[in-house]
Amino acid sequence: MDTVSFTRMDQGTAEDYALIARLEEKHKQANDLADSVLGLLRSMKGPTFGFRVDRYEHSLQTATRALKDEADEDMVVAALLHDIGDVYAPDNHSEFAAAVLRPYVSEEAYWVVKHHGLFQGYYFYHHIGRDRDAREQFRGHPHFQACVNFCERWDQRAFDPDYDTLPLETFEPTVRRVFARTPPFAD
Image (cartoon, rainbow, N blue to C red):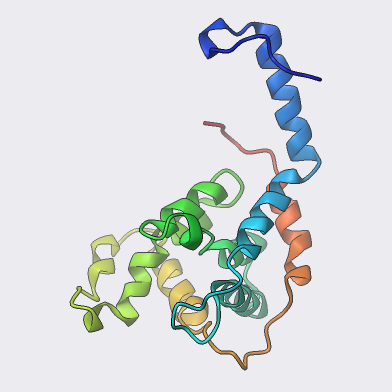
């Protein structure tokens, strides 16, 4: 079995880290990363938390709307995966999803996903004692209008159990292409 020699990172060798890099690259090339991300999406099936559709269906509806609006593939993938943090990071789900997407999508798609939660607040914050115009702090940002459009056209409308939603299989090839990209940077 391919494993490193160390039990502490400061004891690793160049060969150990070369092995890790090879195995990570193999993981990415096998599209395991896309499978993992799609698994996060599938994990949102189930409870509706009071909405008329579950988060999985909501995500598919959002992506369907983006695709029908002829959004580019980065934005379609962003629409599909924008809420994957709901299960694992409900208090900062936007940041969670954006962090997953960041190395693979455009700066615009990343920014929109990172801020969509706050921008979505425009539609309901005033009902829960919060400032519905909280998004205004970002007015003037180059991606402000893209985020407004994302929420208005796709996200806030995607809770309709009767909507003609496309199945996940429609989006899988695009997700696989996006997550097969070589990131321009690595953390």
